[in-house]
Length: 78
Image (cartoon, rainbow, N blue to C red; front, side, top):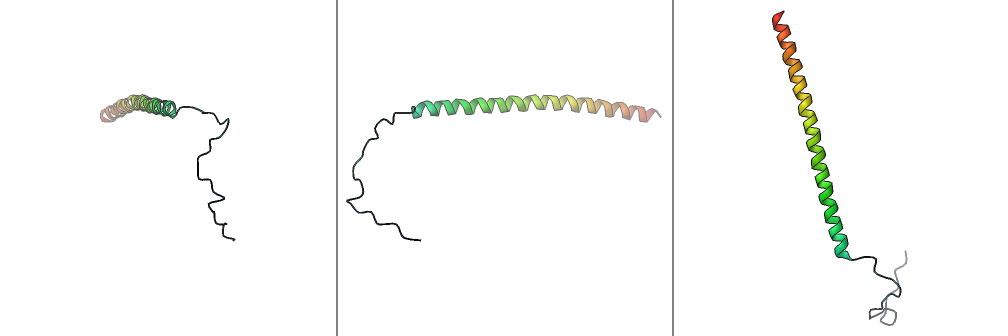
């Protein structure tokens, strides 16, 4: 593997040269605010889905507890 050629002061640019026709693709502040809003929306969606699943689990546990209680009562009678 050959070593890269050293850069001399004659080959390296020492001043800023603007790119012609590059154009600005967007304001960084706008992207920051959009990302911030998106993260909050995703967090709220996650919390809402978690509460929804927790409610369904509570209902299922309640049904299972009543089934166990009914089964225990019928076993006690026998």
